[in-house]
Amino acid sequence: MRHVLLTGVPGIGKTTLIRELAKRLAAYQPAGFYTEEIREREVRKGFRLVSLDGHELTLAHVNNPGPFRVGRYKVDVAGFERLLAALDLRHAPTGVIIIDEIGKMECLSRRFTEDMTALLDSSKTVIATIALKATGFIQQVKERPDCRLIPVTVANRDSLADSLFTELQQKLRIQL
Image 1: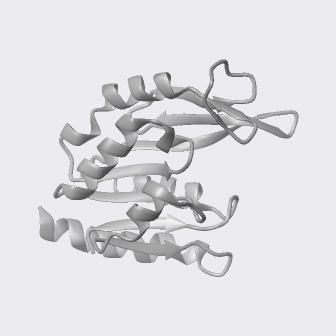
Image 2 (image 1 turned 180 degrees about the vertical axis):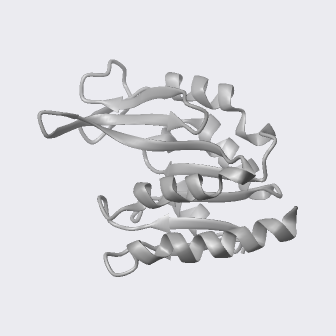
């Protein structure tokens, strides 16, 4: 299978794992982004996206303006789409795309779902985190035959970086 999807309950270590894979795959010059929590006095207030080339965007925050909401967070869909346009992942000169995450907030953006569909249909390898429970586009991605869905658990999260890196490195050598 060409793509790797990491899923699991919130806080299990999916983002930590995907950041570690991005670091280990640096020689392949991956493109994409990961997510960081925005915390104020130990309370999660939102989420920041950080692109692998250093751009940042507050994707969602309890104090964001605008109509788009997931739970208590208001999502900056327009800002997210500007970031996606700047990253232009479909045309990135790399065979490795890293996405954290394919989730409800990100899927509010039509550009994101279109970009993800195009990336998954391309010859690039997508390594992504994906919501554990979902319907619609998220479920469609999870059911694709070219995607390997890997549950991240307390029992396997520490060993997954090594095994996935070895597997991906071998796969990427064959593709190059």
